[in-house]
Figure 1 (cartoon, each protein chain N blue to C red):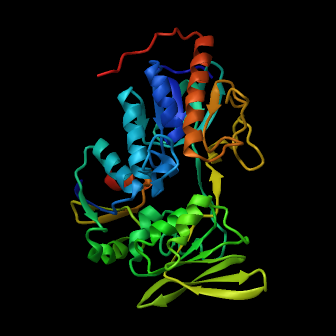
Figure 2 (cartoon, each protein chain N blue to C red):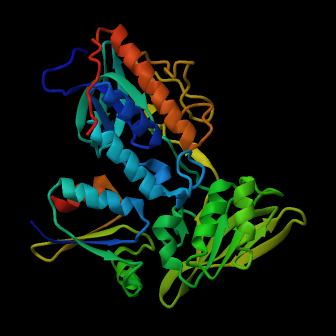
Length: 82
Length: 330
């Protein structure tokens, strides 16, 4: 079961919008951290993903295991939410 | 192979949801032709990840790529277009129907529009793959914000390279543009805009990008410089940088067609006749993925509209009754 979903985004990122849209269609709620508005949290996104890119989606399961998906990648997002 | 009763059947399936497919969908759905689009990436395609669209007719002050894509999506969905977020991996001609294998299962279509567009090419230099997403990028609007106050290298000299370099000046302290040839291929308007940013952007002509070099800094392995060659002197040159953005042209998204009966040209673009029909009857093509495309949003939408009319004709020739469309006016 999914406990929490966080998406690191930027204002102009089209792929970030796609992740949100896809999660909406699947009925998931999520927290958005906009790195344009919160640049101090860039290091957190980098530490989680190892990448200087957005979107970074962090799916936290009931057992607190974290699944990190970089980009709008359906092949990885769907299993992360299963 | 006959269709089974479980497989969904659609009048038109459009592969892709960029400007060409969305424009086509506006036309087909307004004519009451049931239409489903499959998109594996971003709705709006490359247009959606472009900072600013300045030359699309009808927008006097220009429009952001993201806003333009959203307007297109809303317009197509208003008429009933359905967008599925899944990837088409194969297309097979079964006569009356085309079978499309997707990541969400098979569907059958009476007609198909291929509008998968194109993607940015890679340069193939050592280090490019190693640092992909960690210092090497292909989307300025996605990843530019990570480079506030940093130095960047942009590789390329065409419209995208110039436009995205200008966008990146919002964040970067300085940008070195590495241009392989002795001139920019970008439009005159963009070159004029570039001159307004010459305090932040330095253009290096006749300069190849040979290697993207990383090193461990503060415990993190990251991009630190680009090694290249000044081709006029054959001298090696280096550019200290925190990241590299690559805009060196486009490649067609046609990997899924490689083993199909749809003929591609020598560069991998889809061949078509004057009706925009491919070598597989009932399968049409529009936009950047079409052989001979001019890679403009305006031409992609125009081709999308043309393809939609040809698809309607094809469907009517194959038994569809013209319904006269619906009245969508509010």
